Image (cartoon, rainbow, N blue to C red; front, side, top):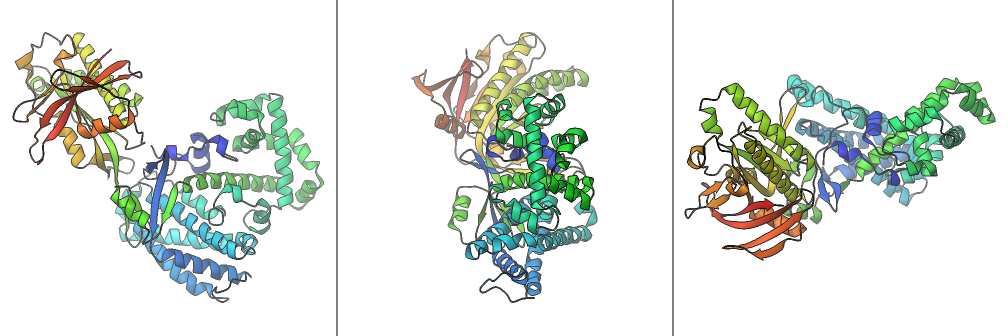
Length: 599
């Protein structure tokens, strides 16, 4: 799952959003703000976050003191004018947290995740206070100027402190394309710290109390109702201007939704549609000014100012719906929480934001696929020129990439004579091991065709291994970050592919391309040496395949077979035990299975 995919929201479950990436970019800029790769549980992305142990207590005290200062009766809250002391203690702690997160963030998106999680924590604290004292519901919207200025200053202080400590390194780590719009939206828009979801949002109370959006609630709703009716009419009458904007800016909204009230709301709330409607002074403008409340408001201030505030409210609400969608993927863990320990034991990640920010178990279950060409050394040391060798590699590797993309793989690196591909590092799919096998089969098939056409004489050893890998991010320059996987399981996958190789001149002449797949084989001799010119998979990979596929068991020559017909590639896959390989530096033997395929 890539970072951008986290911003996708199902239109059927949203109130104002159509759910597409273009809409998210219109609200938060392009490229979208980065976020770390989440874990996936029950098919949905999940982040587990644990903050400094004192932070929630300090948040609660700070909010109580603010509410008390603006008139709330909260038993046990700090006395009037006590907010200064509470704010200072909270400020010092949160600033340390923000500073440590910023230092640890290597363009991963830890700062964005931290602000998303902390704003959720603040909103949950306000909900607890509201449950104890209903008067908090109305008063909390008056907190926006105080909270906004407080958090904005803290964010700036943390950023400035890190930059001043080492300006060059801070600039290098942040990169030239840092997008701070998500943090700005959380801090400035006035929704994220007071509400948990858009469904609980009280527009009337918000507009009556919030000082940023200077628009009376009755004026807002009059404009909202007129614009909604105008959108509905134009959709019904197939207005060309509106239809063009829907097609261009709301491509992800199903056509059937355009006939529903929920769909009409999403169309009307689109910034391009609103600008189009409000720009029609003869129709929309006349209907707006035909309402006495709106005429009276226009008499007190410029019409352009009223329109600007209305658009600002709609944009803020939509950004908050997107923010709350992202926050729904976050589970806040408490210190001493047994679930946090359970996650660690299961090898799941835990984002810990304290005096030092760290990602515990920053590893994922992934499938690593190695495509390792055979005969590269002999060819490169022979009479072929570097130019011709490079062109031959282009011919082979260019033909592989469409298969990698088709099944969701990520090219981690090109190794000169091979490619390392991962499945499960950008998005997670239970069928990642199968997708790796599919990719391997099609790549071997493609190489066979190229050999038969005389375009290459390379053979290939393919290896697939499933296990925990650690994701590392190496910053190359102000624009680029090299993400790669490291760890024992990556090394094992490499061993499977680059095991002992038979020289080309031992088994074929360069003038005779291989006629069929029988030359692609995996064998292990009596000493445990692996010879791989086919597709070798580890036992861990096969176990994942067994867990998710209806493999058929059959008797084969010398050992049992497992078979599966894959409709995606139209091949019958056969898995057969090849033997136990022994690798230098690996204590125990390593069970290896060969994959063969046919129609």
